[in-house]
Image (tube, rainbow, N blue to C red; front, side):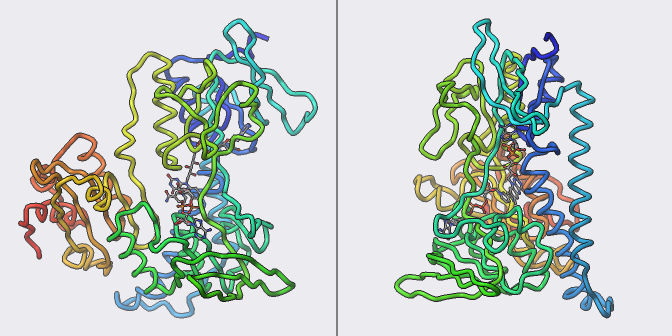
Length: 474
Ligand code: FAD
Ligand code: NAD
């Protein structure tokens, strides 16, 4: 059927896939998206970025009302929260946003197929076939054809062999975003993005939260000073950390869960009611027909691609969590755009060196570029400028004085190499640093630029001044 021939068939409707589809349609291509979920938006919108931030925002407001109103002279007696309503609000946000993606695809005339897509081989006339199995007709796949196929099937949580997910007691982030009750004691395995964000949500709502982390520091790839400062602040907020520790087993009996944790030579048993395993995610490459298509996976199970995102099979491309690089929504989106723009003959590129990372705890931690540890390791001579939020007027007004901005710049030219922030709204502040570093700017460029007063962003300017030892407000 002629309507089933597309310029590009995208398998996976997450941030990588749906953004690629819209951009391809803007470029005049006839596009199909195959997504097995009912909702578009992938992990990010359905069970990742968006629901986690919705709960972080709700639980933060509750904590502000409970702990911070009083010093502002605001009385709020009898403060309570309604968890069911908080969850319903989160679900409503997800619904609105995923419906929004459906609308955008329709607006751009992208055809959506609901079902699992699998590569079904080349036809021999330059077209690749994708078999779509829909839940409504499980035995009879629908065949659609594409001049190009884009694989954007994302990732899934890593499961620990001695701590298998059961969906009830030992859970992944999916279930931890939807607990019907606040756990008494939530044990979190992994002090990375998910452990700290979802640990924060439940800690704020009254759970005892213990994070068991294998390494000596949380957030292993983050600048050490930022990670250590954040760990210190989260401890003040009541979270417990067992560092250089591993969970070695779990005993689940009716009503009690005992988790065995090993730290060095000592072993202890911790009683808890839920275990969130957040030790990383792995690419989701199952049932795609990759081996039959001659597409290789690397040692971490990621689809191997060249610089144009093309796999070993002609005309088949891959992006996002499925391939190498940080598993972040904005990275997946940029790859989707670059991939289809190159198919259309544009010279688009993705600046892998300057992908920002944000941990949405309170305060937030945000980074771009090299960490101090990486610069030392690479023997690059650098100057560091640092400015504390305690000396920032706006942060004082907000009573949010924990944290700092740190700028790392080349010693000879002042060119910005890395910016690391732990502090209020670090997620928004990092955008300035991403722009400057992407354009090859220097600390002086930041220092010479107006920053409105009084704003948190003045801490960025002061840190830039401090690179040359001339910060004003220290
Ligand atoms: P995905 O979003 O995983 O989408 C892949 C889609 O493909 C899925 O919808 C899946 O159903 C579909 N699919 C898979 N196989 C098939 C098939 N055979 N046929 C049809 N469809 C298929 N990143 C950030 O940048 N910021 C954040 O704040 C953030 N928070 C997160 C919080 C949590 C709790 C989690 C788990 C992740 C978070 N992430 C965040 C990471 C982010 O969600 C991912 O990096 C991003 O979703 C990757 O996009 P993607 O398009 O590659 O894949
Ligand atoms: P992560 O890679 O961020 O952190 C995993 C942590 O678990 C690490 O600190 C690691 O040392 C530790 N670990 C590994 N094995 C362990 C073990 N056996 N025992 C104890 N600790 C162990 O992974 P995550 O938190 O599961 O998140 C997965 C990915 O999702 C992230 O890497 C990120 O790409 C993405 N994500 C991003 C955001 C965001 O952008 N704000 C939020 C959530 C998730």
